[in-house]
Image 1: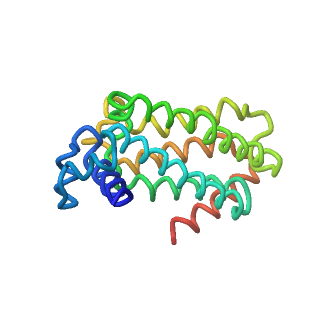
Image 2: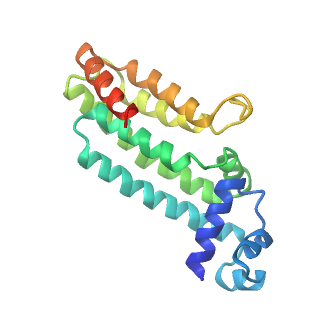
Length: 202
């Protein structure tokens, strides 16, 4: 029951946002009493924290598979982007805002993952691209890695990008295009065009 509650809560949080989902909503969705939830979890904070930890482990696994299988740095970035689109296609854009405002411990856990693991992964990909001659030698990998992870997060902020005006996936693809093209050498441009066309036709 513990895992079922965590899984169902995660689905509801993704669909409606964390703040909008109450313990009553979770109980109703599972057709159980609220008391049963509290027998398994101390409070909503604990459910949110466990959901964040589960999401982090899932992303680490996916990132590891991408780095292992990618043919080159551009392939790596495009595969990362595909994972991102798949994972957040059904996520309510308010999730990160709710996390930051109402669940500070879970937010700190996410920040640590973002600023350590994700940044290091993007940094390694950029350095790989430079060694492969796909990215320009003079670019500052550390600056661009930070830029990349912050622009991804920025798309979740409705104050910056209105959900009524922009589709979330559209934002991600536009920012990815800008990010990658700004790093490419002539050789990298040819590889990017070929791989991007292949992915778009899948």
